[in-house]
Image (cartoon, rainbow, N blue to C red):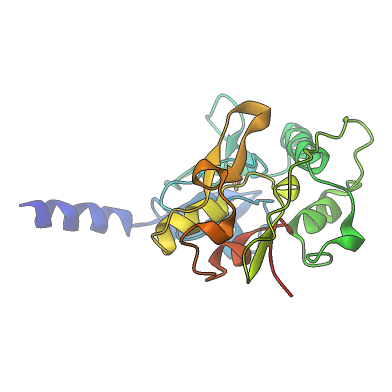
Length: 226
Ligand code: FES
């Protein structure tokens, strides 16, 4: 009984639907995430926090804002599932304004010292700033950077929490892909940070140095030790 109910819902999910993004007609699987449908069809929507295998999007970066006809306000494309007749606009003046504001907040919370960073030129925040034509030194917002100690204890990776954008990708892969759950989001509000249980140095945890977290970090907060 359970099996047949599951099959029925999978069959529904596999149904093809036609949606419109910025006037372009696109066929996609019903229920797939709007963000991936757009990106897979060559329509760029900025994003920093979603990974393809995440079942529940964290919607932490707020960059993938779009407008959908019939919705009262802008929504995040990573949390929206496509349905027949969905009409999406990815760059209305309101979307652009909100997206730039979200990006400016991320930039303001990140140290502006790219030449000294191991991720310089492969950093997703740099690409985002380039795409949105924003400077990496915020001129409208006061910098909101922390002054936290860098964890250099581990033999193969180092963690600089001051560069962290709190996208949550490392926390997710550490739990869901490796099953270790060593990295966690701790504290609240402005004090929120990625840390370990009891804020232990990584070398004192069960971290195996798989570097999954390093691979998904969009900036240079987690880097291989070289
Ligand atoms: S990708 Fe949608 S909120 Fe980050």
